[in-house]
Length: 321
Image (cartoon, rainbow, N blue to C red; front, side, top):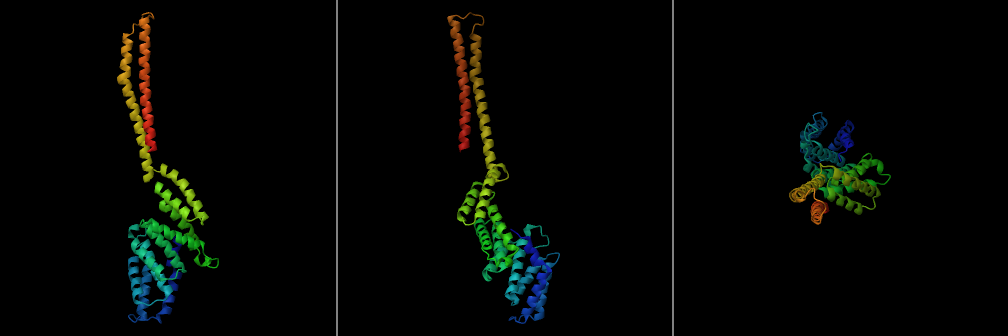
């Protein structure tokens, strides 16, 4: 649930200017004498330059920001801003190519977001966003129970915001509220029967969220059909294999019935045709011969029907399994 507004908000010139002003205002109250005020300001400026540069040299920016956190006593808003930037860089990219997801360090990002949540008050916008990114990290790491828990937290938090607090969290609150629900469904969307069971559990656990119940129920209805038709999913492939297996069994049964008919019924029919006098009037013997031919023909027909019935029974058993 990577929100584009977050990236733009933390990298524009206004945020940078604000950060520098706040930092400069706190230099005089710094209790750490390891660096002079000029050295401290220079260190932060270098980190900011790397962060907003076109090359996005985030590995260098992270190293410098970490140095700032260690060596400079910062006001809480500045410290939170820097920690949030570091976490975002670990999650989104750690190199110049923003499209290469391999540059991510999701485990490290998760650690940084958790540090933010533990260290700062819960009513801060960046802490609220950090919960959402924690959910994203768990999702990327395929820890679905933890991802679900964090997505639900974000949704509930957004839904419970008092009217006077809502403007403080815009535009993030609405985006995260809807995005969290989409991602909860997405966690189990392609898990077939297991996913259906998990989504039904989520519906049962959240009866006080009618929108969630409605959306999840609709997703389940659509998912069942999609999973059957989509051969790219494990469930779809499994069902397609079952269908192919049934078709193969039907073909084998029909071939077997045909073989039985060719080997047993046809020779008997030909033999009876040869033994019947073609031009003999209907005497008692010839009538017996006619009846015998009809009897053998009936037996042959029954053999074919029996073989076909066996094929149908086999197919039905396979479907039930």
